[in-house]
Length: 288
Image (cartoon, rainbow, N blue to C red; front, side, top):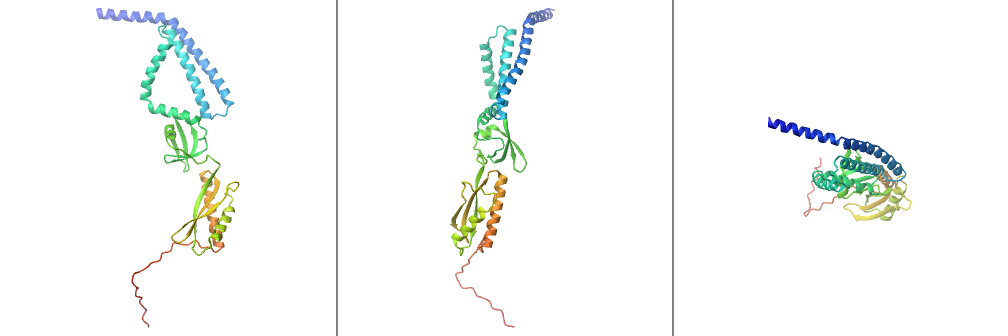
């Protein structure tokens, strides 16, 4: 019977201690209720202040989240000190520091993406609506969140990319400027006058609606002696979005081809000249 008596005694001590803590628990509950109200007030004020700024929506959400977390940490610390008077803010922070190390090792990738997301949100180079390319992923930036970014590829597929990939690897922002330079190679026959061909190609490119010509010159350079043609490097500027680049390239190629045909300038097929060491016998058809 002695073990049962010990158990009953322990339960009585626990019940007595719980009853003695009831006033502190009640005060702690009131503190938590006040924390809920204070959190709503702080969130409202932060949202109103951030609404007047030009920060990204995701960055505004981050500041709102951080302010809410700060209010809850303060409220929970005050409630814990009330229930357990032996606790002090310094001991709580020390415990949080030790716990954060263990949590940091367990959720290293999560925190890495979180910190990378914060840095990316503060950057101004990559914006919503930009077309980017990173690690073989190319498309339009639809959303930048704290942990991940959403990239809509040109074929319609949505790629969710961890922010650490965008932070640690080179990112090509194709729409950083409103225009982009495009180059195609155009060959003409060797018996064609080079200057005449250059003028015809330049006039054809300048006649294209998609070509941007304000402060952006059209450049036509004779590039090389090809195997069967003189090759020109044709360079112009157009809109920077992928669809605009493809449409402009299509228009330029079509108009250059038409202009060269109208000017009777040949775009040659590949030619081959065969040389034999010995004369080849030519068989003559027998007369009937």
